Image (cartoon, rainbow, N blue to C red; front, side, top):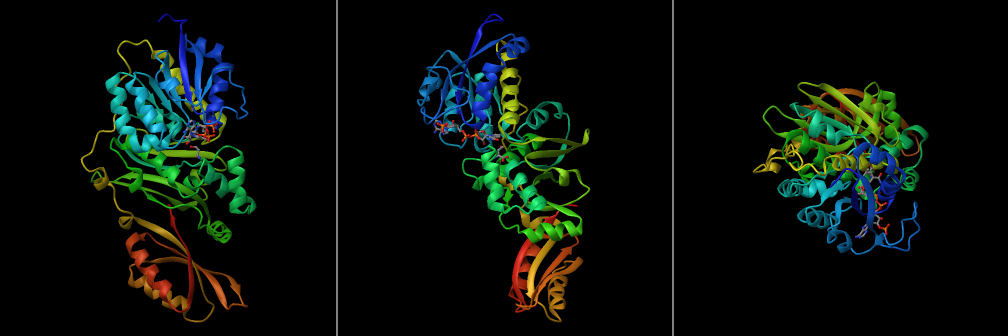
Length: 437
Ligand code: NAP
Ligand code: HSE
C-alpha cells in the first residue's frame, strides 16, 4: 500500500460516540492524511434503524443493518465498534479479528468479559485491538498503562471512572438537585449507558476497573468479583453531614495490589477528604490516580464521557493503527493480561477490607441510646472517631445519629451493624459509607 492509498473503515454503531467518530473521519480528513499519510474512507456504518435522523448525515449507501456488510467485506481494514453491550458486539469483534481486521472498540463490557481472549486472538492474527475509550472517556489512561507506565510495578488505582454518577453526585451535592432529575440531565448530555442502571449501580465502573486493573496488575480482574455498590442509597442529608465533617461523597473505583500478590478491587460511594484531588473532580469529569513504584503518584483528569471526549480516544486509536497499518512486523505484542489459573482466588473479599466508616442511623431521641450503640461497636472492636446528633424531630421523637469510626475490619462492622439494627431504639440504619483516608 503506498502512502496515499485509502484505508476503509467500518463503523459498528452511530450513536453518541459513533456520530462523533463519523464527523471526525469526514471533518478531519485532511489532518488525518497529514498525520498518518493515509486517506480514510467510511465505507459502512452498522445501525439498528436506518430511518433515524443523524448528525452528520451519513453519505448515501453507508448505513446498513446487516453486520455481514462489514464483517465480510475484504476491503474494510479497520472495524470500529461503538454499539455497546456484550451481545452481539463481542461476537462481531471476534469475527472481525478472525477475518484479519484491526479493531478499535469503546466497549468496556466486551473488554471486561472477553478482553484476554480477544487480545490473544488479535495477537495470533497480527492485528491491533485498541480500546482507549473503554475506560476514562477522553483520559488516555489505557494507553498509559499499556505503554508509558509499563516499567512500573503498579501498587494501586483509585479513580472516578463513571461520568454519569459523578455528574449526578455533583448536582446533588452542589444544588440539591433530586437524583432522578440529575440522571435525566446526564442522559440528555449523552453520558449515560443505554440502560443507566449500569451507571447508577456501579456496574459500568466495575467493567472499567476490570479493564484498568487487568492492565495494571497483568492478571484478569473479572468484573463480577469486584465488590460493587451503586449510588442510589445516598440521600441529601448524607451530602450535608459529609460536608460538615470535611468530606465530599464520590463513587470510587479502587484496585490495590497487596504485598502477597492478591488484589483488592471495589466500586462504591466513599467519603473523600475535601483537600484530596479526587474530592475536587466534578461533573462529567473523571480522574484516575495511579501509584507505581517508579512514577510515584500520578493523577490523570479529564472528561470521562460525552461525544467529543470519547471521540478523541477512539480517533487516537484509529490514527495509531493508520500509522502502522503497513508495518510487516505487525503490532508489538500486547503487554498482556497473563492468564491466571484462578483469577477470582486472587481477589480479596470485601470482608477483609480495613477502612474507616461513616454510619447514619435514625434513632429514638432518648437517653442511653448512644451508650447501647457504642457498646455494640466496642464489643466488635470498632473504635468511634466522631458522633454527631442531627435533625431531631420532636414529632416522631427521633433524631439522626452520624458516627464515624477509625479503621476497622469490614466484617466486624457489618456484624455490629446487624446487631445495632436489632436494637429497639434504632428506627433504621440509613447508610454505611466507607471513608477513604
Ligand atoms: P448509543 O448512543 O446508544 O449508540 C449505540 C449505537 O449502536 C446506535 O447507533 C445503535 O443504532 C447501534 N446499535 C446498538 N445495538 C445495535 C445492534 N444490535 N445492531 C446494530 N446497531 C446497533 O451509545 P453510545 O453512548 O454512543 O455508546 C457506544 C459505546 O461507547 C458503548 O460501549 C459505551 O459504553 C461506550 N462509551 C460511551 C461513552 C459516552 O459518553 N456515551 C463514553 C465512553 C464509552 P441506532 O442508532 O439505529 O439505534
Ligand atoms: N456511561 C459512561 C459514563 C460513559 O457515564 O461514564 C463513559 O464510559
